[in-house]
Every structure is written in C-alpha cells, then in structure tokens.
Image (tube, rainbow, N blue to C red; front, side, top):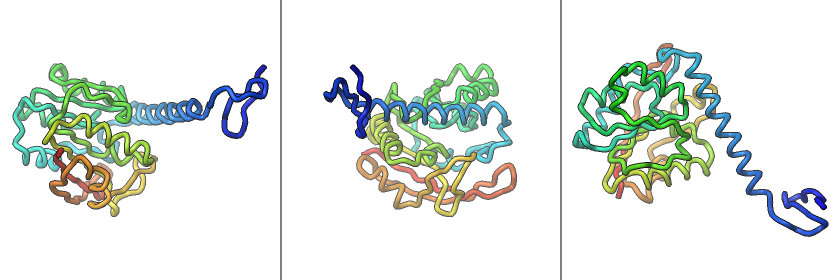
Length: 237
C-alpha cells in the first residue's frame, strides 16, 4: 500500500522505505528547464529575422581572426556551438574548410541557415541539440562559441559544458569562446547570462587547457546599441 512521500522525497510503502525519488524528480526538473530553453529559442528564431536579433553580424571578423592564428588545415574538424543562423559557416566555406559542424538547440535556426546556404548546406554537418547533452561524434580541432556559453548560469550546466569540451576537443586542439564581459549586458534575449572576465573564464577551463590570449571588443547591434564582449582562446594540453 502506497503511503506517500516523506520530506526527503522517499517513496514509502506500508511504512517502509522503498526508493529515493529525489534523483527522479531532479531529472524531471532538468528536462523541463531544457524544454523551456528549446521553446524559447524556437520562438525567437521563428518570429525574428536575423537582423532583428542583437548578436547578428554580417561577417564574424574576430572569430575568423582567431581561427587564422592557428593555421589549421582545410581538413580540420571545426564546430560552431550555438551557430544556428550565424554567418561563421559562410566564412568557413569560403575559406575552403571541408569538415564543418554547426550545433544549435533550435531546429528553426538550423533550417534558416540551411535555406540561406542553399546547396552549400550539404557540405556541413548539422546538429540540433542542447550543448549540455552533446556527445561529440569526432574530436574537434577548433571549437568556436560566440554568445552561447554565457547562457549557462548554473555550476552544473557550466561544468557539463567544460567536461564535453574537454572530451570533444583533440589534443592540442583550440577553443575560442566569446561571452559578455563584466562591462557587457546582464541579459540577452530576455534571459539572464553569466558575465566573464579573463580570470574567471580561464579558471573554468584551466584543468585541461592553456590560455593563449583574451581580448575585449564592442559589438554594435543592429539597433545601434553596444555590447562589450570578452573573447578568449585556449589550447588543449
């Protein structure tokens, strides 16, 4: 006979402890958060043109400058995290890179990018996935993330991202992250973000990566507002 839950979320049957439901309830809460995140981004990309979002840039100048520092061969495995509807993939294709991967939580963003690229979309590996659930299918030589990592605000989600990056980046491979700096906004697209400085970002990745360099820059949005970004590059130890 089911007698209910005690204060520790343990299922009781006829007064005897049977099993702990807390991990199960935690899993449900986590899944609900992930679904809410996905729904948020599907709504954004379904209702806004690319020039109607603050992170839009017609050419990813800073990201490409970091990439060119490393003199990677055109066969290098390159992934853009949160790259749905970004123009980084266009620039990579123009440079002749042959193993390009784009991951985004929003299927709508990916589909819009495919439509923009036309037949060139067939040259790209597309992944619709929450990055904290990502299982890298290959080892990446260059992992790029502009304005996705800073949406992770809990230690659990941040640590999961770091673990996945450590697993998914090849030995001596490169990681480039762009987030809002401490002089940047506290929110983006209605969501709280995690600001970083050079020290706090480096601390997140110091176990498996050596920092190469960090810079800050002002991004001018399509609405003529200014967002201060921090970009840091790292190499896998």
